[in-house]
Length: 299
Image (cartoon, rainbow, N blue to C red; front, side, top):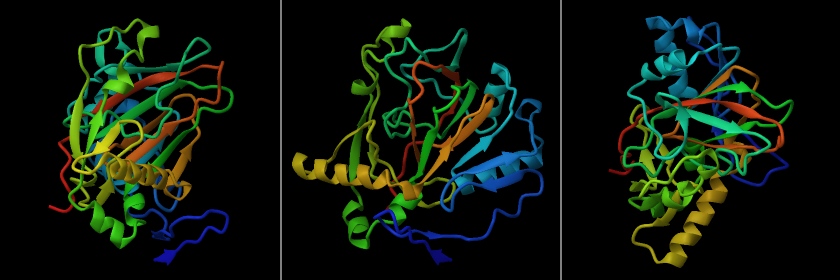
């Protein structure tokens, strides 16, 4: 173990493993940063995964939090089938989907778009009572340049907090609300608003159900306030956590190519899509895997 120091960035020091990814015999794994992200090679998602490959993909997903695949020629059913390997599929409460495929969310921004998906740091649909386990995005069309996605490790963000702050956050819960995020957002695509959108109360620090590790679980996109705190105090705490979470030391950055796939763990990862390519087009589909109700780390 070593402590990394970055002279040009002010912020916490992060303890990281220096060893390269090992223990994988049936897939190729290339880690992207010391704390998050790996590219997976040597397999075709369209052809399906045998038991050994699936076991190692799941291992890489748990270890690296977000994994990437290049040159994957997936049709909609193959994309959905890959998602089902990890659980039931989640239906987005607001976004448009492919015709006849409610679990296949459309991701598209072009010259006529007033916005792009995911421009603010967030964990997907954290306003649900049972937020998604993970999201699988397959981009088909890329701009000539730009359109990267940033991913941040909420394990690393939590680990870098002071012991005093960890103690303060013990037992705190926050409200996540989809109303301000979704109402009117997809009107330009002909999607009518629903009478209401999900709203949920979740622990500020959650225990990952697979790894058992603590992860911060508040985000700038959905989290509105902390339960039981005066509004000024709660707002100040959230502002601090949002800024802390967005530290580049916790991040990896993925440059999309046509037919790339990203699979990220919404239980311990936040992401932000950069809309720096207007008026070019970026489009694809997302499949989301259903998750469990978050459990407090400190229970």
